[in-house]
Image (tube, rainbow, N blue to C red; front, side, top):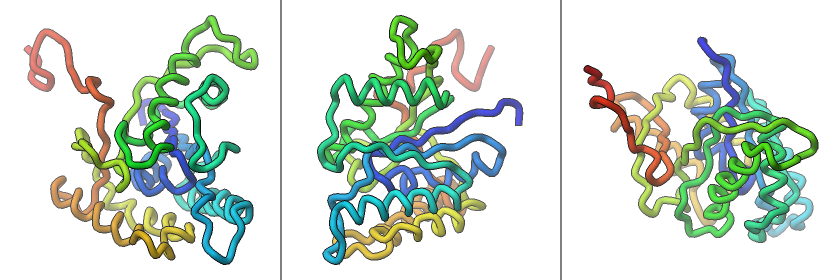
Length: 238
């Protein structure tokens, strides 16, 4: 390992980051890098019939911590309410302060287009917080400025409009552990509205086929960020 990095996966709800990039996260954690799952909300509004929303919020935070432990990562869940996320200065400032405190090297988050409003807001909040965390003119709890080096998007079944992968990552050796982490979540294993576990196992298999490996997970650059500028063709330097 030439340089230790801090990979942060920012999801709108507990469970989003894990299903999208949990195997990639485990690959980097195994290699000795720091990995954090940051959940903006618990995702508590989908509470099962036998639980209150507050009971389910507590359960999901506990599930997130268990999943993170399986993957070799840590979990942070903020107090914003599910399906009520807002793109306002308070939220941006809190996220920017977290970036300064935790010092992530790169962030993986939702794709820019989604059927879920919280998901669609998430990458916009990340971009705004990245700027605020990096600018020295903002005083955020006295913490020094910190800039991310890169942001990627990852796959979520609710965020698939125009999602075409730019990067395939071989996660064959990590996939069983990834599935074990997913199994910590009640909704992944018991949802009657969507077959989460089967979908993401099949998605990893399908992406693996395209990657010529057993399993793979994918990433996508933000719109326009995959442009390369230089004096020669990338990979074919003169």
